[in-house]
Image (cartoon, rainbow, N blue to C red; front, top):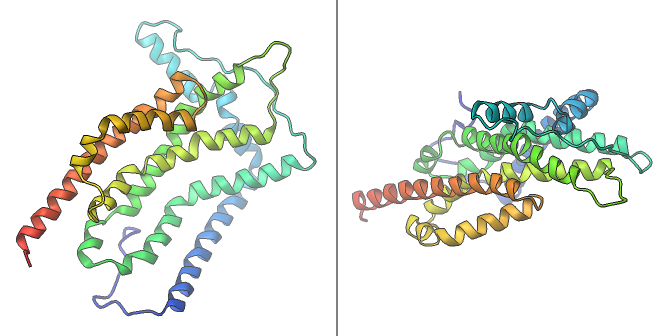
Length: 280
């Protein structure tokens, strides 16, 4: 059975405020147990987590660098797209910083890996309050939201992070050695990935806003030019001051906006059809 197909009685039993809080508490506890469990496993393999995953974009044999270089040669551009990450040394300057950062990274990665289950628990909590037709319209939402989030994170990791690391790590000031602290490197890697995962949820957000009438396809088309400017500004905020990296996040943002217009139009059409069939 799909994660989001939760059996709900035709007549939902009314619950008191305290009963709702109690149920919410157990959903949160179960989510935390899974996050902590995955985080502990990743902490036990922290050598692999850091060397292969976290520090991956700093290695010359990183998958993205090899793919870009192969594309460049296939397109007859020679080594124009072949990127070599700068060689810089990461340092932990605080007492116990390596240990604290290992715990932090393990549980953040644990949350990302456990996101499908966390969202499943969230959906189990709110879905009983929906009408049957609303539950039917949102069938598969756990899978869709989880997939969009993970695709966004992977996009940030394999596309944004390599260009950002190349730009920031290779930016030099005369007389200054570029030796970032471990904490700062981790914070930037988090900035390159987590926001991309949230941004890729835009179609789902537009879907719900269209369902309640706050967003219409006409309004989204009317303010398309404003959205393009907002997209570029958002890309500038969440990426380093590198034009290539900003366009790398700006292009999928614009595509997601266009997809959201299509989704809003479909929802709007379905709502109009429902109103015509049931004018009362």
